[in-house]
Length: 192
Image 1 (cartoon, rainbow, N blue to C red):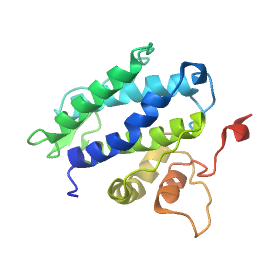
Image 2: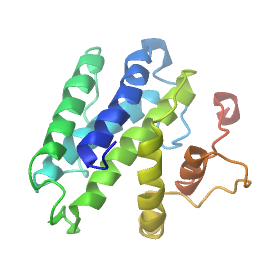
Image 3: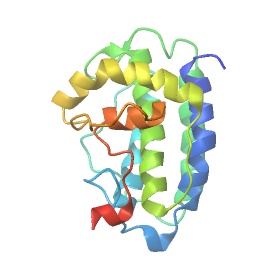
């Protein structure tokens, strides 16, 4: 697999969409490992992330400051369509070149952030709703490198929590989750 953001997003989408489609309406109020959100709030947040990162791929403006749209029953179809648009936006010529966003970050780093949100929040949702989830190994490898570099800035901006302490026998994905401040062993009963 090549390491283009769009190619990695395709792989991440193949793993994420079954989880997003699998969230039942009776699970929307459940807690998630992303402590500031219940399942519905996290779905709304992830949808906002996906649409904003489309604009950032085209060097456009994003708006993470406004409240996310409150998704309704059509969320499954809308997620699939918007993730397709996200992949297309990052596949466009020049999407990974130059700088983008209000902080003028390297576009490839911003693309990795989109990939990371889709991957990690899919795990959050899978864990909260009792679904299986295993992200693509190439996605995890790329994010491991990118998130290690981003972590100090992400922590200072309260995007990542403090690194969760894990032993040396964790998988690369568990290490990635720990880097974001998540407990890789999180279970819904732990949130009660």
